[in-house]
Image (cartoon, rainbow over all chains, first blue to last red; front, side, top):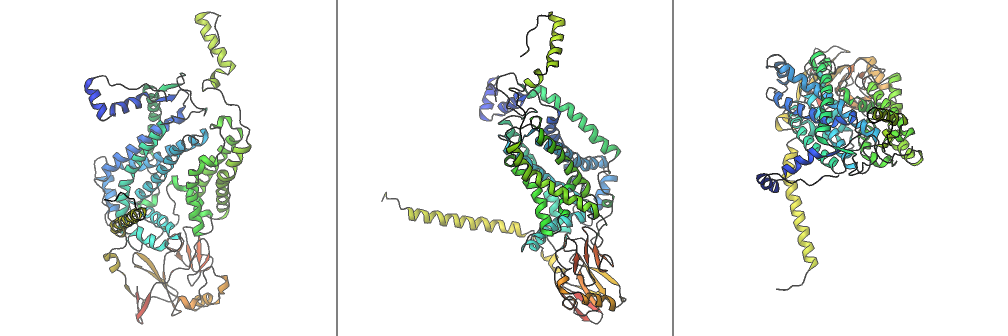
Amino acid sequence: MSEEKYIPGSKLAKWFDSRLPLLTLSHHLKEYPTPKNLNYWWTFGGILTFCLITQIVTGLVLAMHYVAHVDHAFESIEHIMRNVNYGWLIRYVHANGASMFFLAVYIHIFRALFYGSYKAPREVIWIIGLIIYILMMATAFMGYVLPWGQMSFWGATVITNLFSAIPFIGESVTTWLWGGYSVDNPTLNRFYSLHYLLPFLIFGLVILHIWALHIPGNNNPIGIDVKKNKNETMPFHPYMVMKDLLALLMFVIVFLWFVFFAPNVLGHPDNYIEANPLVTPAHIVPEWYLLPFYAILRAIPSKLGGVIFMFAAIFILMLLPWLDSSKVRSCTFRPIYKKFFWVLLFVVILLGYLGAKPPEGVYLILSRLATAYYFIHFLILLPLLGRYEKTDPLPRSISDPVLDKPSVIDKLKKAAATYEGGNVGSFK
Amino acid sequence: MSKEINPKRRNFLFTTTYSVGAIGIGAAIWPLVDQMNPDSSVKALSTTEVDVSSLELGKSITVLWRGKPIFIKRRTEQEIDEAKKVELKDLKDPQTDSDRAKNPEWLVMVGVCTHLGCVPLSDKGDYKGWFCPCHGSHYDTSGRIRKGPAPKNLEIPKYEFVDSKTIKIG
């Protein structure tokens, strides 16, 4: 991208920067050119960074009071809630923070789907993003086990048993994951250890994600390449920083509404019952953000098949940059794909709804149809659309769609006329 | 000193170096992997003795063995008959009832659904045996899978009657 080379101002700065170019880095982050037409859907990267840091900080503090032992874990959570100063607040922020993190990541992912942000030259950003998403799910799952309630225990049992579907070695793999013959104290301990580790791996991958982003620069709502040196970009600071902060404030309002007014609405009441290996709750449901995949798991009437389809639903996204062969990125210029995008969003939300329902009757039929559609979208519709869809003409620059609308030109002319009289030229 | 290059000798040295290196790394990683397998204290709890003298006909008890629930069911004549009547070709995981219960009156099984590990509920489901509430697997009065996503019959653990009223599991 078009950036002038940074030359440190003082001698000391020069000395330091030539040894460790932190000043160059901070200059780059400040001046990083962003397309001037980015909308508010582009603020979720910043929001997600905020979510990750919030989870790490609150988690760090909770770890000072939590005890990872089957006899004390449940009790220590209640201890945090009742005795630790502000423990209730920190735990509710951490628990709801996980949900908010996923809310933001789903918006971020669907934004990429709508505007084709996964397409060349941004495939690597997309794949790193998906790895982050997978690690997020693993981290959230293990975190949910730590309070050692009924949902913790049985959620852990069901999810670890997914691996027993692997032919031949499945049994040994689950025994190895458990450190025993069922989910028990060794399992709780290792989940705690990994729950502490994974967020830092995510943090590292976020740095790679941003690094990979800064090579080609941001995609934008029009989806065409931004021209260099054409007044089409703005420095990240202060323009995008301010915009991101405004969006973040709105997001935090929603976040804190949950924390203060409905802290348990996204959780399950059964998790306030201590784990009991002899009684399975009548309805086991994962946290809301895993429900679409849970619906796919249950839609397939075979153990191994269900597991394969569930993992395939995630990993198929890695191939998206190649399955979607259309050269046009943004949905704005893809009239047919745009419709299918909304259908896909509806189907994913429907799968989420079905994942929370018992797998019987009409729910089961609907989850099978929705699962089939999910795979048809990626494996059949996208390659066909890439080949046969007639896309709308692309503008020559990201400024054109604004200036091309006659009403806008008239409005600008009128405004200019009040200052400069009738003799106003073209704005192009 | 000869300046002649001997590729055979060089390749041999490379291959052996890589091999020894790979074995060394593998040997260093293995303890880190194996530490996650069941430890001695977990393995030590591998048998449980249960007094079943007070169990009435048609009732069952659940005991914990290796952290898993074990169903011990004292079956009625009717339940045994039902289990024996079933033809092998109707079964997803074919097994005769006599293979599953040495003494037909006593059925001892691991009470863990072979689908994803929930505990099935007794006297429920379409086959009057067990029903798993998690994903809807139905088991018959012999604990065999009849309907639903589970691939296998409820597992029979190793057990024996120590005397007429005590069962040793494991």
